Image (cartoon, rainbow, N blue to C red; front, top):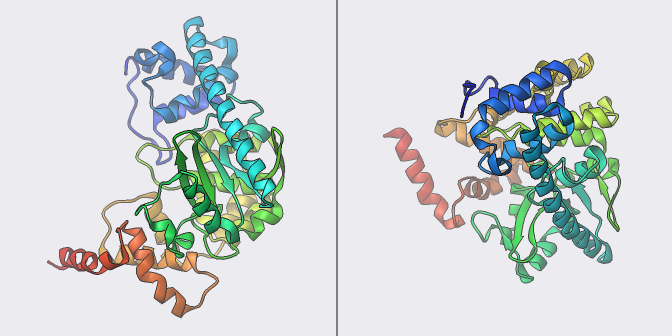
Length: 384
């Protein structure tokens, strides 16, 4: 980078450079202009050809910067930003045509759909086809229909992006995961969900989400989307886990939801408590308050902090946010918590029975048979 030298990170959610870019994209007045000046000075060498060499997480925020600051930027930078925005507009047009086609096929088959994340937000919150770039789209369907639909996609030439590749053939996979990425050489990619959250994959986990959903129109296709409170919770959960390159898009999504909709805070508190994700919501909303002054109501922060949580569940979320070398008992505790979360509707014996399968998927082992030697090596390394 040229000019400004940024420290690597000031908060686990963002680097200083990312904070400047987010402030330029989302805030107003002097703080937005000064943040933009610092960021563009630091990235002078990447400006040419529409910032093509910039990491994709940052580049996807540039249309928001262009929309937010408009004529307050130098002419050369404005030209490059318009190029970026036009690129994402064209890419999103292609994605939305594919999404419309998928939704109409589901409608014809009598299968309800709920559009998640970027596609829903682009229509209902951002209000244009360029400000919310996407690489694919996310569709939620009822969990009772998921296995047949995954098999149908695969018969039609789509490739599942799960590890191991045959995991989707195992019934327990649909409790271990919440979604599967499917790609096709001619049709692109789709994230097919049977649950909204990875952290809540038990049977019936999405009843609240379906019941609280609202209508959404995608071109000629009628579908549904999460209500604003659930949308904000989902956005926070997407941004919460640790990532070496923080996925800062969630901050822009959360800020846009807060600015363009009315959030039912009691609803958010209820869902966070029911699905045991209050700790993650608390940290994300506190970050938004501290760094972007969004004025989350005090009672929301206080209520989230006071929701009762088991000690092992807190440790589970702490390690999700700050991963590192884990001791063998920490790994087993995390798998145990994950098994409980995926099998909340089942008894203790059932949880014990599925624990080895969950551990197999957690360790990304190719088969159930490979679990035993793996556990032997795993324990030997820790007791040698």
